[in-house]
Amino acid sequence: MSRSLVWLALLLALPACTADETSEDTAESDTDTDTDADADTDADADTDADTDTDADADTDADADTDTDTDPWVDATTTNHGFTPSTAVILNPERGFYRTTNLRVARNLDGIRDAGSTLAFSYVHLGDYRDRDLDQTVLDEATAGFAAARSAGIKIVLRFAYSQSLSDPDASKAQILRHISQLEPLITANRDVIAVVQAGFIGAWGEWHTSSNGLLDTPQDKFDILDALVDVVPVDRVVQLRNPVHKEEGYGGPLTEAQAFSGSYAARVGHHNDCFLASDTDFGTYPSDRIEEVKDFVAAETRFLPMGGETCALNPPRSRCATALAELARLHFSYINHEWHPDVVASWTTDGCRTEIEQRLGYRLALTSADFPSEAPPGGVMPVTLNLENTGFAAPFNPRPVDLVLSGPETVWASMGVDVRTLEPGDHVLGGRFSLPLDLAPGTYQVVLSLPDAAASLAGDSRYAIQLANDGVWDGSRNVLGSVEIRDTAAGSIGTFTSFARLPSR
Image 1 (tube, rainbow, N blue to C red):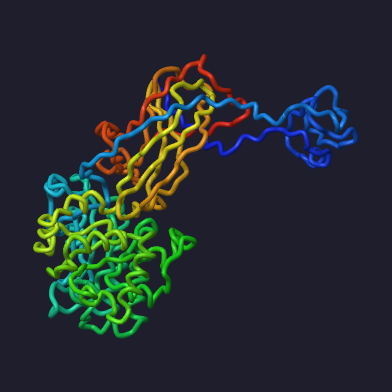
Image 2: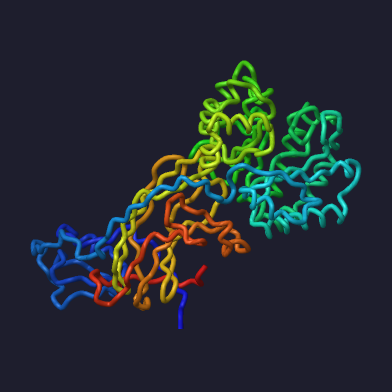
């Protein structure tokens, strides 16, 4: 009968006894230690009562044996090479997005069929400017989220009252009340929410031309923003339309030490809905600080999601050369497929559309991997994965990075890496993993698994990250090769290590 076991935690190091251990070290030890007769202990060392010593406890301090060699023997590794793919890969939480309306959409299968895993949706609240939300609008949005889940996509979400420059928004008090009412909806559907845009204020919820003067006083706009961040799950980010608002409210730019801390600054990112439209991107950047504020955004989006859309044809700035440079500089994860159509069409004409499709967000590919072709049950399996991210950005939402052996039974171990730190460039993952002593013999596939973090989606391969390598994705998993588990395989058996046994994923 197949059993599901969990691998032991990553073995970072295996200490070896050395000839210069002192009697003082031995005297201070409170742990159960098997002291070999050749260990260097002082004849007068006062060892703990629980310490098991060899029959000859009084070993001369000068008695020296060759202990400089680590007695542990790992299974011998084999190098595996991989071929990078040139395909546009339908990976989650990245790429060109389509638009929808959660309040009315009931079948979103066409979005994924068209080559997108993201859809942008307003939830229009214009009918509720002066009153509380009713169950009707909440039920409509819930049905829309269910359609997204069924379709295997995620939502870039924005709540707004205004659909034009002349449309009013709502009062601060009403917005705060609506945010409170929306918390259960957001929480219940966090699995299919990629990111939440700040919304609510001004035309299209883009934080300009507020009919209620909500941008005139910093206290008002940041009370609203903080309230929204508070109701959005801590593993999701809220995006602001204008980087100057982020700078004004939270300082920055965000540093590596501050990233992913759960603070307000670490949970407020950026979107640009007039990308490349003018030198200032129609006011996205102050005219006297264009490069300075771009640098601010570039530093922040190493750790925070960036996305948006174009809004006007503006050659040569909106053409391929500048588009590719700024998508990379600003770490874009997603952009609108539909708007502005002339700009998007120019990328096709100029020949960079495919590269943009490939590189929006992350693009993770193995360059090589080292792991054994065989190992004994209970033995150590050393693994090294050399990975390259040729995308514009790192993945922006947390998810597991697991090494899985799949065969007569399934065992897995965390690779101990935060996927959000896999920025563009080269990365080395791995370590030494101890196999269960009673692991069933047989042939096991070696799998790198990057499933969605949500329990509701973890088993759905549409939400798993596919590596950009030919011949690796088998339709649901990244299969790197195989390892034979057998009792006669070379490698030491680790009887000194305790095992953590958890349910399989």
